[in-house]
Image 1: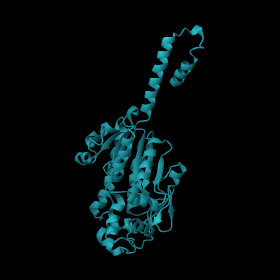
Image 2: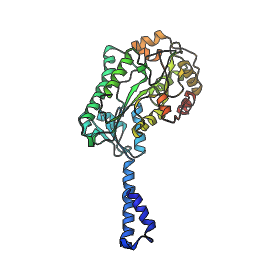
Image 3: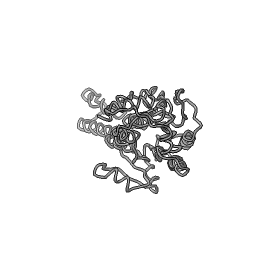
Image 4: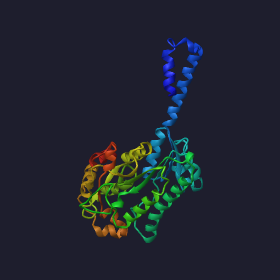
Length: 349
């Protein structure tokens, strides 16, 4: 309304009724002042304050970079200030706030949104202690974040929580296709994901919640490719197990863009699969990776070898699920990389 008023005054002052008795100098001053105020308000409205757990991880680092590039204010919620400061040095990330756990409440208070990405990597040998940590690192941090948000009064409570979960929610299958409405599986990772999501769902109902079930993230210097590329460089790359298991992947740029969109777009709420539109069999993934690197991919890694190295954790790579991003496509999300061949080419170029 204010902007409209300023615009109207600026082009109607010569014909305005003399009965209003508005002096010309005041009129010009008023017009200019109103325009400045509106422009400032509009600029502020487009900027966010975002608190992030798991910011030092593979996805988190890129998300921080994206938010900083768009001049949003970032607050890194960490349990290791030293690690966070080494990843986000002040000279390269001016204005960023790094907060250990005792400071999380102060950071979340007044934030527009919170992104929860914390969790111990699952691609390791699963001992009973590791399995416990896989669960508690996710559910414990999520519970803490939800509790802090719920304690805040309306005026300073974040309006959106984007909380990571995983496609492990669906269990594994070589034949089924899973979308956001599919039921949960019955294995260990499905159990972890159910509890993880259930904890996030306890957030205040006035806070918009987006649960992103993330697939295998492909990008440079981290994630699955960081483990696969060295094998291919030594001419030892190939399918893991039979190679028939499904590989539901997403490029790092796309998962970051999806989280960013979930922060800023009110239509993004509930469960959203964070996977590319075209999952592939692992054998096809390895074939494309070998071609992109100019290396053969015919030498399979047998089941027993993986189980010897990873124990029960071998299930992560020996079994898979075919997950499709139905919700993201309905929302009109634009995938930069829909096919794994073009994604790998971009990563390795």
